[in-house]
Amino acid sequence: MPVAPSNIRAADDAAIADAAAILRAGGLVAFPTETVYGLGADATNGDAVAAIFAAKKRPRFNPLIVHLRGLEDVNRHVEMHPLAKRLAERFWPGALTLVLPRKVDSPLSLLVSAGLDTVAVRVPNHPVAQRLLAAAERPLAAPSANASGKISPTNAAHVAESLGRNVDCILDGGACALGLESTVIGFEGEHAVLLRPGAIPREEIEAVTGPLQDATEDSHASPGRLLSHYAPHAKMRLNAATTTSDEALLAFGPDVPIGAMVMRNLSARGDLKEAAANLFALLRELDASGAARIAVMPIPHAGLGEAINDRLDRAAAPRGEA
Ligand code: TXA
Ligand code: MG
Image 1 (cartoon, rainbow, N blue to C red):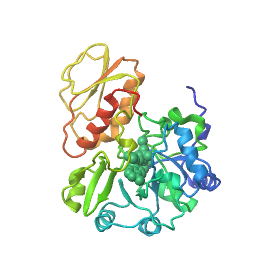
Image 2: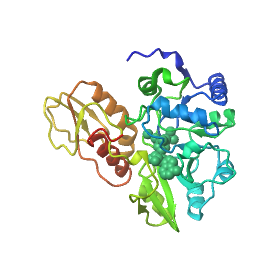
Image 3: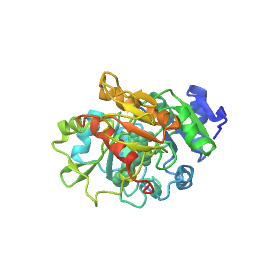
Image 4: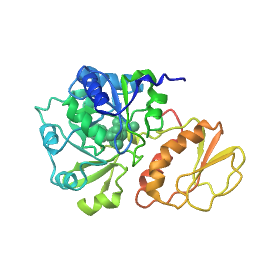
């Protein structure tokens, strides 16, 4: 689908001021964060939040992450948990989302939490996200800026391809440094629960909280936990040791099997951080190559490998879930 580039703007002061005005008027602005691009709306305006679901064609009202400037703002909207405080001190601003009980007097739209009594909050570290939050003077609800169930965007062109004119303005801040969504942590009693593996590896969280519990069936509803998500058009074949001439190969590490129609390497030196940053962009590239199938070499499970394998499993899952 051809997209007029005119709603992409370099994220300079003037563009950020215009984007803030759009947000205050109830419009939608896509903006860069250190993880992926977000599709932002004023989180206190129910109509604006509803417009996010419409633009993404999300089939259900799934809860969204609310982005805030800092801990002071976070405290206005949610009740902190003792472990949440320690995680916030260690990782904010950054790629960590905390799911916490909503305060009764919080002005956040009820739609952001889709009827749950908790809200997911994050303080992003990206300078453009921070400047936009300051200029808008509003908390911003922002899911990843892609059509529901599709691959998350890690640059402004990805957003334009996926959402086109359904967004009023796309602020271009270049490629996202991390390339994977934030790690989502909830709390049950005294324990921290891993609701979604993400850009901060489990090991780093556990150094603060002790062992994380895994999310159970009745842990909070989580669209990031739907089986099919991040889906390319091509079929996916995981843990591929060899490949064929009708496949596009997503490689990892220095020893790459030959014979694929097209090959991209997540990290030739086998670095998981580099692989995370490249994952969504290379999946998109291989999907656009026209190959019927994308074969993916095995990725180690340690560290960031947990989140990378989580996204690959969902990309390979039977479709129709998301
Ligand atoms: O890195 C990120 O997290 C990006 C950037 C833009 O900040 N945002 C993002 O948002 O990935 P989204 O909407 O695609 O994912 C939101 C995640 C989902 O897994 C959702 O289930 C979980 O957060 N979540 C949100 N509110 C929740 C709640 N009240 N209870 C449990 N999970 C919640
Ligand atoms: Mg998403």
